[in-house]
Image (cartoon, helix red, strand yellow):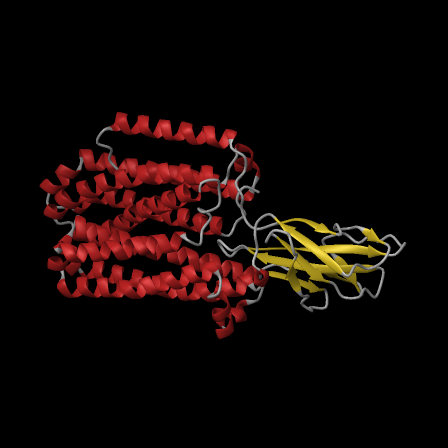
Length: 452
C-alpha cells in the first residue's frame, strides 16, 4: 500500500535511476561472482606421457587453503599447498601414483565472501592410449561417478532457512518501526505482540539452522552433517559462518529490546532511549544479514554494501508494516486508528518502495554486470522473475492507495464498517501474499551464480 505525495517528482527520479542502471548494465563488464577455477596445469583432458607428480590450480580470486579440497575418486583427500612466488589464487596439489591409463581428481572451493561451493572434475590420460572419458564423468566398473556437489536436500534446507530468516527480519524490524513510529498503542495489542514474538523466535531459530546447513553445504555433506557439532565448529572459522554467528548474537540482543517493549507497552514505544536501542539492533541485524550475500561482489563493494543495507531496510519497513497492518490494525476496525495509522503507513511505504527500487537497481548493476548476463543466466532469470512479481505487488499497492485516497474518510465516518473496509483488506492481503513470493525468489538468488 503506497501513496506518493509528489507523483510527478517521484516518477522523474525513478526514470533517472532506471536509465542510469540500464546504461550501466549495457556498458559494464560482468562483475566477479563466486570463486571459480580458471585453469589447471596440466590442462583438463590432456594426454600425458607419464603421470605428473603434482597439479597446479589457478582460481579467479585468492583462496584459503582450507577452502580448497582436491580428492581422488576413492575419496582420499590430496595435500594442497601454496606455490612459491605465485599469487594466493594459485595452489599446488600433490597427486597420487596413477595405476591405469586415466588419472582423475575432483576439486571443490568455497567462496570466502558468501560461502558458495563450486566444484568440478579434472581428468588426464596417461600413456599413448587415448582416453575418451568425458571431463565431467569417470567410468569405474560400469558406474558413472558424478562431480562433487552440495546435497540437493541441504541446498533446499538452506533456501528455506534463508527465506524464514528474511521474513522474520522484515516482520521484526518493520513491526518494531510500525509500532514505534505509527502505532504506539499497538505495543499492548495481543496480535501485534504475538507477531513480534513469533518473528523473533523464527529469526533466531532460522539463524541457528542456517549455521548447520551452511556448514554441511560448504563441506558438500548431507542433511545429517547439519546436526553435527563439528560442522558448527568448522563453519565458524569461515566468513559466512562468522556473519551468521554475529546475526545470532544480535537476535539474542534483540530479545532485550522486545522484552522491554512487551513490558512497558505504549510508554516504552514512545521512549527516545528505547527507540535508539531498537534502531541500533535493527541496523545491526540488517547489516549482518547482508554480509553473507552477493552485494560485496562487483567493482564497488562499498556501494554494494550501502545499497544492500538500504534495500533490506526498505523491504523490512514495507513488509513488516504491511503484515502488522493486515494482522493487527485492520481486524480492529477502529475509526481513530484507521484515520491515524493508514495514511502514515501509506507515506512510509512510498518512501520504502522508492528506496527499494533505487537500491535494487544499484545492486543489479553491481552483481549482474551486463545486459547479456541479465537475459542469459539463471541469476538474471530469477532477478527478472523477482522484478515481475514485484510489479504485480505494486499494482496491488496502487489499489490500496486508491482506497486510502477515496474511501478512507467514508470508512472512518461509518466507524470502520466491515463492508467498507473489506476491499482494502483484500488488497492488502493480496499484496502481503505476493511479497512472500518475492522473498522466496530472493532466497533462491542468494544461492545462485550471479552474472554467469
